[in-house]
Length: 298
Image (cartoon, rainbow, N blue to C red):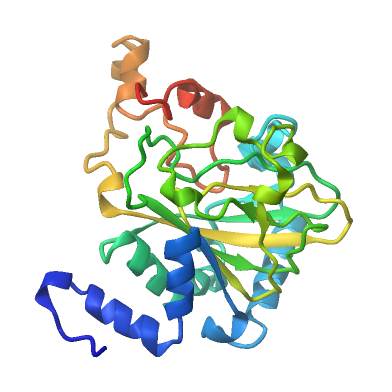
């Protein structure tokens, strides 16, 4: 049908026209039905060699940077994901700004998060040897169940190397975005020590230059990496506008904060795991809220 200029859609009619014009309607249908989709390189609108340039830049940063400048790398056995992570990438090179500002990336953010979406993070994940799997989880971090039917965050990831099962690719539970809850420990896949049959997890098979798109409600993990081939992607995450606190208290003097008791610092966000730069989040701050924040009492 012809899509009109419908005021009730608050601009989403134009977003969908762009989706149709770029041949992405199938991807939108997959995202709605399964909770994830893969956009092939030729539909991303990126210039030739873009993924290779991103990967080269990441490897150059790693060559010059001490891994321990990232807080999570001080906790190799207990951090959520194995391998190297690089945070706060926008400030490091124009290439990363281009990755976030890519028209198709922003189109997926607009469709899933609404036109007032915000950038939540730009993080690189690299594994260059065998690695343990990442546990099954959703990216609706801290959202108590039942999760909203609409997602509060989304992930649009640039795939920079061949993503295969042997190479520890991402795995998804198709349709899990409709469960409106987080996976339990019993719902970890068998390859991650749980009871969920491994064939429940659909592997993401994608070549370099693809975009993997999934909602914040979609259950996902990584397969164990069994080879020495480099595996890398850049996760561009977006959030709905309301997720961001409207007021900042970072200018409150430390001596005032210290005199108000231990809970005061948490309430004003002084102990948040969010708000990091290139050092990444502190695992100990994540642990402060992890026990309750995804329960209905969190």
